[in-house]
Image 1 (tube, rainbow, N blue to C red):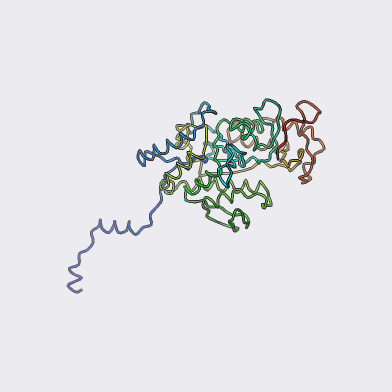
Image 2: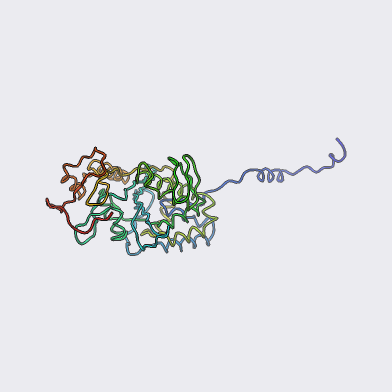
Amino acid sequence: MDNDNKNQKLPTRRELREQREKNQPKKHHLVAWVVGVLATILVIAACYGGYVYHKTKSAIDETYDPTNKVTQDSFNGKESFSILLLGTDTGALGRTDVRGNTDTMIIATVNPKTKTFSMMSIPRDTMAQMIGTQNFSVHKINAAYNIGGAGMALKTTSTLLNVPLKYYVEVNMGGLEKLVDGVGGVDVDVPFTFSYGGYTFKKGKMHLNGKQALAYSRMRYDDPRGDYGRQLRQRQVIMSILQNSMSLNTLKNINEVTDSASKSIRTNLTFNSIMKIAKNYRDCIKNMKSDYLHGRGAMIGDASYQVMSDTELQRTSDIVRKSLGLSPVKLNNNETYQNSKNTDFDWNSGDSNQKYYVYEPNSDDWWNGDKLES
């Protein structure tokens, strides 16, 4: 060994440890606990200082809807609850409607006993009685929000399936785009190759930015499964938002995410309730599952609808009620009544041009009320 090597200073134990840490890949830590679409802006402020806390609280306070104020549950981590997720067709693609229809309607249920987060999609074209109108009225269920706001959407969906619903979260399509960008994009499994909105989606795994995710969520007519295929893609995007929000991107983009949320989200959950959900139900997000209400195509007047059989309505009701820890109850509502009057309707034909008639309540007369919208 030469003199230069003899005189070379050996690194200390501390220096060796620091060098090993420097060479190791950096790990991302959890910065958010998420439940529902609002989860993308829930950051545990105590870990990251007062600025993040107040930024998040200010944004969520701006999303609060006092016109649909309800008594908040304890959200103590022991009781199940459901939230109606609404995606409105405003705020993007040049649409400037104040309220708009709900292209997306999903009952999201959190069950702490089974530690599950489940989503039940309701097709936008589902025939439903509007609950809260002065006179008997039947439309596609996506019109409930446009006609009577979140309150009517909650009551109509609740009555359709006989499930308790009092909380909602509404996100407009423009907000979805910004939320996706805020969490660093979403990862989806494209079911088949298609082009829409100027983008091409190739079958298989893809990472999408906000504009791509919006286009991916909206395409319907080229999907062999129609609106049901679109619902599947929408659930993929929502699931990925939840998963990707558990990364440093949410904190890094906190200003973008909170600003987008305050402008694009409305809910009747208070800030305190949201923080309790984030704290007490975080484990449920690890086990997500989804389903949807299966309908049959039919013509009501000149408009194309999805009508639901008694069997399918009951199946869906039972699933949601079980997730809430409730016993099944036999459905008895306007939809089952209309089915009993349409005795000639063939539920197995697959003909989406079959005629389906809406009757006046407790009458053999056809309903000739307000215009059935397409």
